[in-house]
Structures are given as structure tokens and as C-alpha cells.
Image 1 (cartoon, rainbow, N blue to C red):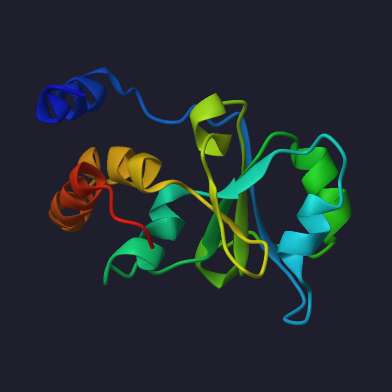
Image 2: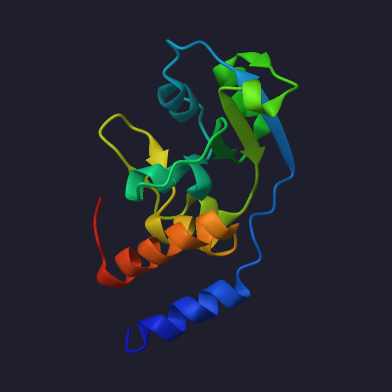
Length: 150
């Protein structure tokens, strides 16, 4: 890449956000290994969203349930069980159904099998977010440019 800054600026300008078809907030058992449960479903794509992955890459902390993008909400709900939660802030997890390829591309898988959004995906989501997220996006941008590993 001869002009990485220009490439990132172009990505930021062209990024339209993640298209979410449906979403569900859930309460799940604290003993459930949800990563393993989701991975066990053939054909299901899933990953923690950039918003919820930020804590992996920066000191940024966001309240609310962990958000997980899934390619099929019915398959994910069957795998996880859980109880639907009407009030999002009381939920343990929020599933976002999306076919967006970027959500499942170049995920970083940790030692426990959790699939985190890539640093680039996290930056894309944050650079278009609120003021706190945009501040965290600056650090993420520098990490992307330097090719920092977690």
C-alpha cells in the first residue's frame, strides 16, 4: 500500500454501516459457552460486532449487552436457547441478523474460540459513531496503520 491514509479515508467515506435485518435481545445462562454453541451450527456465520470488540483492542468500554452478528437468527436462537428480553439493557446478549460479508471477514479468533470483529471492522464502526467512539477510532486507526496485533 503506497497511500494507506488515503485508503482508510476512502473506506471511511464509502462505508454505509452494517445492514441489520432483525435483532433479538436475550438473557442466557451464565454457564453457557455461547461461542461453542454458535460454532457448532453448520452454515452459521457469527462474530462479535466491532462495537463489542473494541474492548479487545482499546481501553474503550461500552455498556449494554454484547452484540453478536449472525447470518441466521433462527439458527442462532436454536443453538443458544435463552429467554427473550424486551428491555435491551437487561439482556446479556443482542443478536443482529445480517448477511454483511464484512462482519464475518478476517475475524480474530481468541484462545477460547470467540470470533471478534477485525480491528479494521471495529475502526469502521467507531469512526462513524458518537463522539466517544470517534475518539477511540483514532487509536484504532493508528493500530491499523501500524499493523498492530492483539
